[in-house]
Image (cartoon, rainbow, N blue to C red; front, side, top):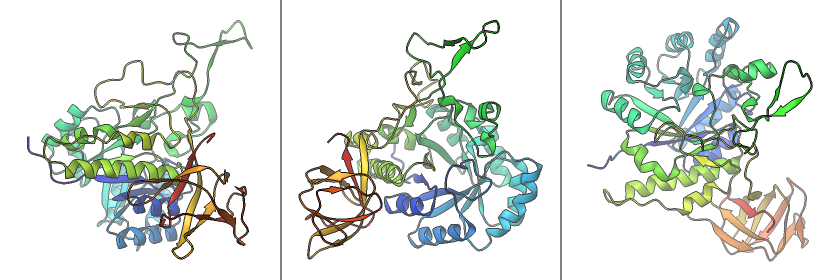
Length: 413
């Protein structure tokens, strides 16, 4: 089989302007963002029109793209406001709008005829005929539902070679079909399909019998726990070759409400895996197992491959707890480096001490390890502990660190 020569796009989440810049700096080809309305991530900071314009300018200067998410399931009041929202975007040069609704599709095509339209996973695209319909209407890309196998994706690619296909490759999984869930609306009065999901699928549940009010009985599955809806996180990092060979155009990372450290770590790992695949001779690609160690250093749940290799069995849920695995803390971000003094200027995020072994996650190259032997406060006085979040400290290191480098350390180090 001939090797595919066109690299897929690496698409990263950007919950705010700082995360947008981090994602692009660490290797993303494009980012997806939300405006202050019409996005399914109300918990993210999201972007004003001015911030969208600034983010697009930053991306375009580096040859990258920005996609605006407007994929809610709209009611009449939303449609009435959407026209004004689109008019606010005039002049921002956004590259594409991500939609799930036919009415919003028509309005976007009319008011922004030159912008690309991508069809959201919320539109439940699980077959080639549906994808073909969207293409014929003018969509340039379809974001496929998460409930699809590699074989099904490959068939859509074979039938529609001119349509871009985007898939989620990493991040939290929704237990409801392509995110179309009414559980949050019912349980908390917050509409998940309009951006307000309370994530009740992660809650702990009990059973109460009608004739025994107030008597709560635990719900067990094989006596392993009660978090019966709590999905593991998706991770397809070891299988980038399979995704490329299935014809995927864009690898999408979930996480607009995740931290900058999460974005940087995960983007960099997928960037390297994709680049390694295309640098290898046909049939000789070998996954670098160290990359899995990297994505385990961010806050995550246990990982799963979801539906890609067939329908999930009984191992894709985490029954014992809805908590994240957090083995590392991000303790600081480098703001600058003085070559003469070999001192890195660091904005502290979490507490760390002289004598701690830390790792420097840099935009370029492998991460580096170092034991902190000397550091000072902003006034130059030597200190034993960096103890005040958001304060500036200086760390002595012979490694020339770029601005935007993240400093992490293993917990209980």
